[in-house]
Image (cartoon, rainbow, N blue to C red; front, side, top):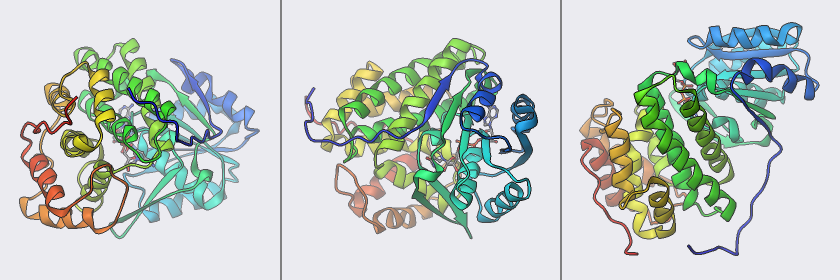
Length: 362
Ligand code: NAD
């Protein structure tokens, strides 16, 4: 393993509490630590009953429950939530749910500066990043702002017990994608590499156990621990080709977030592998496999996840448009992003065939 002696790493002030039952037992304490007395709880419509449990635990410190989070945070949804927060006289927010609920909490923080507590219920990792996203007329913009980074993150593995098995798998692979790209990011560091490798290991060990028994709380805890590490890697580094592909496929073609990450990851890694031997070695070690892209493909497909963009509803005629958008703007990637190469990655992902091993020799 080569050791980099040229890196920078920034630690951001976030408190993490991790414990089964913590959504109820720890969220009020986190609010008190932050001096917050009127918290608006935000969630999606499906997550409302869980969010109400958290709201009940907050007691008099809860200023209301706003259950209108939607995928990719449409601007009108964000505007409405800001109005509700202001009307309620909120001095902070608690986002309970997946990346969509946390995304709405971040949108409120971006506009109002209100501190955010995140109680994640998926493995998306948004809770550990200063990245916000807003969608206006079908175009998704993202940005980084420390004000949206949650001040406290309450990880409660019990909240994830209800995560359906298909979403457990795809959300888990979404987390793996953060770690994989962090390993070859231009701003990676030895600490990020440690977190990324253990994040991949924990998640890859937990997912088969969860498919066999979704109620296995120990495996749920292991997966959520992996999601924390992978999310931390996402927040600390700059993502490359894989995240750009998924951003375009989700933003322009409306493909579902976690499923798209799951389909694309093996092909993006196969493309980057020759230019990122250290990252490949770390993923291989974490998965206990010879061929990292193929092992990822086998892991997700073997657990019943979709394998092709075709299954997700993309049309073959969309591929050149998607490739042009992905190559349209420069971004960090270990291997130069050429148009024909991206089209090759997209075509392979569209078909869902076994990824070609293109790894660098040992
Ligand atoms: P999501 O939040 O949209 O949730 C998917 C579905 O699962 C929803 O219907 C939700 O109600 C349901 N759900 C969530 N938790 C559940 C649980 N425990 N039990 C049962 N059902 C549950 O999906 P996601 O994949 O978590 O997040 C995707 C969104 O987050 C995208 O918009 C993506 O762009 C964003 N995101 C942002 C960042 C960031 O750093 N800003 C990082 C990752 C993802």
